[in-house]
Length: 505
Ligand code: HEM
Image: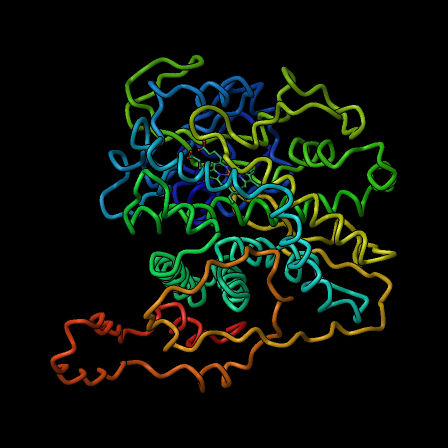
């Protein structure tokens, strides 16, 4: 992801440098973290050698610190005086800050942006969220049901959060598929695909804000816009993007890592299905032992100071080392027994302090429902490759699978393609009166079938709008009439975006 969780694998993250050893097992020096450390970074040896933090090079000649100890990670998360979340004063000129929105602000500025997010998310309770997740899951699983095989990352865990968030934002399903596709391209690591996708994602959120300003409904985006803190358009775009940036990728890999754990450990599978391991305990267990984020670009030292035996210089970046903290013997006593860890919620994956993730309940419910739906619908699910044949994503931050191939008992039925939900033509955007507020996501039709881009292109007018002729001046009675609505002629940016989209491109 680009920012938020700060887990952009291209920016602001440790690289091997003067202090970096080529061999990740060389615990006397900082590990080579760029290009993706293996799963076997020797955290225990690093902690033994360096203590609670280790110097790393975060850019050419730029020193930062990777926090290794549980206590040190927690201290930096909580200390708002010595550590700032705002990258602006410290980012090298010309580089885009690795964090944005609420996540990149301190103090009152942070609260002004955070509170609308917290309150908008709080209104998405279990009764609202679960049907939305189930609907997205039914759609995705229905597409592979007849095959008897699937990639649970690419065909399930990766698109699912985009479909869910899009529906909660109050947009038709076609935009959810667009957002899911853009997300895949963004993560592809191929600049030819990821750069246009990043531009399209910005257009999606700008279009979302424009649409919801003009036509609010009972959705998360409209609630955020209506918040008394009065966010500007720019702030609203940043806030809604932040939900997707911080939420999507870790959620995908939490679902993926959890499904993998079920598939590779029959004991965990039995305990989970039998109910002796509750969904909450299972999700926490995965967050402890196979966290979807290993490291996170997080804070900057605000002063020269001594910290945990090291000398920090003002402006130096501090990287959270969650994977290391979770194996710190001060909190983790070895072993990998899900039942023994049940009830232990003190992992750091949600953060702590002022920026603590405001979507913990939301994410748990989403992930639990996603897992249950997959397990329930893919009867007889087994791994289609040996566990050691699974490929992990590169990069030091996000910790997840490239793909998770499974076999299961094919249903022999293809998902019935639902009638396409009519997508509003551009002229719908020219409104004289407001439509009634939406009834909420759970009343929507099943996800519509994929649309042929040519069909879409045919019904959305090409580029420049033609100015409409003005009506002639009205006669004497005109002053008693309501003035004619000034018809807006600009096409809806979201529809333009959708028209230009070629799935899988
Ligand atoms: C497995 C999934 C998730 C993980 C591991 C996770 C983790 C985190 C962490 C560690 C932080 C704090 C970062 C810091 O202090 O620098 C954070 C903040 C945040 N998260 Fe989550 N998150 C997840 C899912 C989500 C979802 C689904 C959403 C929204 C739909 C979300 C929205 C946010 C927001 C808006 C913030 C910024 C809060 C602030 O700055 O005040 N997260 N998340």
